[in-house]
Image (cartoon, rainbow, N blue to C red; front, side, top):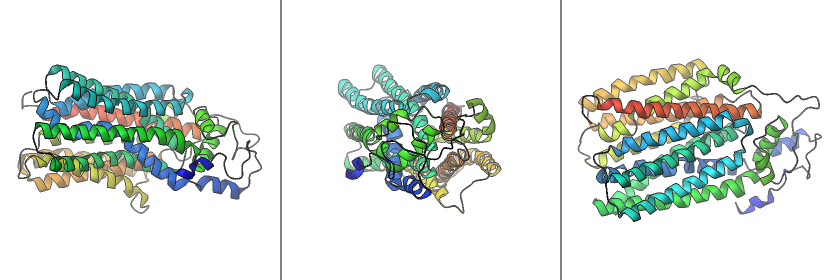
Length: 435
């Protein structure tokens, strides 16, 4: 990254980009810095959910502190309305929003929220009670607002670039779950399984989260906008009428609006959000249904309704880790062209067929052993990751930059709506079991 400061101007471009660039120069601009970009997108995806996944992964600490309040379900349910409402507002005003300010504000709020977890625990001395629990829920809401800034903003921004960036960003989101799960195993081994040990693990998670979110702020501010490939795609989007990339272009050292691929008689037009949604309703429905199912099972059902087995207190951690790792693997599978789902009809059929997992989980929890439950959880994660990336990389194809940005925001809105409905549906597993 030390050499990133040299990317002040696109290769072959002077201070103002002109229309006489040849195909060779454009080809270089479209690829230079691509692998750095993929890696940074992966880190930024991690930062998108690292803090909140940390809260979910230390659920055994919160269950110990707040045994009467169903913290796993309540914290998730508190988070969802805020992320959904924030994303909806930004999606509606997407065409006029400064994407750079939006994303930086989100990553800063992630950092402050992670720091807030530490401050709260210090002030409450690790005690339970309704006041600390309400404070935990407020922090979860702040994570939701931050996610509403970042997930839609980054997805829209990356949708107008190469598909590998979107894939890597969402792989990073899944990786945040896998990394926090691995760290939870470490803290469980390193610290005695007591209240003090759980508290030390929680503080370790929050400290790591603070550092990581600060790293994301620095990467997005100083490194990512200066990559040649990023400047090329943002310049292309600006030439197609995008108003959201101006600040990012300025951060990359481009003061004028370049036209690397534009024609002299080009007329800047774009489809409205309503038109984009009408043309991509099947993709939007895919995203909604994928996450309705996933969040109706993970994490609440896995944490509270799968019974006791020989793994004891490790059982829930193994299930959560199985989901997170398989979800991460699933998000890399679309890179293999032979197994990537590209058919719109095929994607919809796969998404609907996936609901057969509901009775499978029900009967496995009631009659099956832990091996079958781990296998089902892995299948849930694998299908979640594969289908998510397949939809998000296929949907933007064929659209101009501003339309790709808008479509990325719309699909994330339906994704989050599915998460919210799924988190609410998760409570249906408690029917007949009392509060």
